[in-house]
Length: 198
Image 1 (spheres, rainbow, N blue to C red):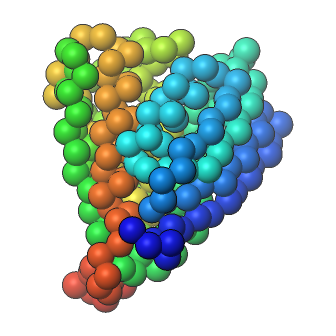
Image 2 (cartoon, rainbow, N blue to C red):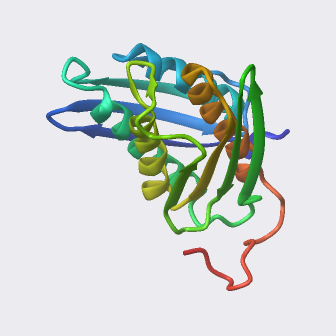
Image 3 (cartoon, rainbow, N blue to C red):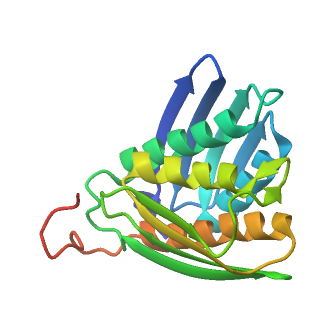
């Protein structure tokens, strides 16, 4: 792997509800340093970064005493913006990623396309299922926000799962693995029969 494989981006977002700053790289060996004011989110981001091969740092704080929803969604939003910057025209990347992750009772499949079109689907489990201090619907908002700003299509299918912690963690790990595949450099041009992404 050459130094030219490493790509990076930085983004911030400050609102009355959240304050987020991140600097990320892909294609290198550096680990990410994650600090959030909602510990379950930090745990999931650690997993996502490890399996995606994301380095750098993520700092995120928000009004989690009210509800972790704002912070979870906004981190997805900012991370998606960074990936949109990092991938630019999408030229020379694999574009697609597919991963299936088993985690004890949980089995999750993630199919990802940096298509320029935002879409996110969570299938196979009820969004009101309680998980890690909130519900699966709130965790889905992380992925929806990422897809909106990254210009990505993501299908997350929970194929099996009884323990909601395992389900959410498998979602993040599977998405991370799909991200690593989709952002890999191919040495070729733009993978699009239209000749344009979006």
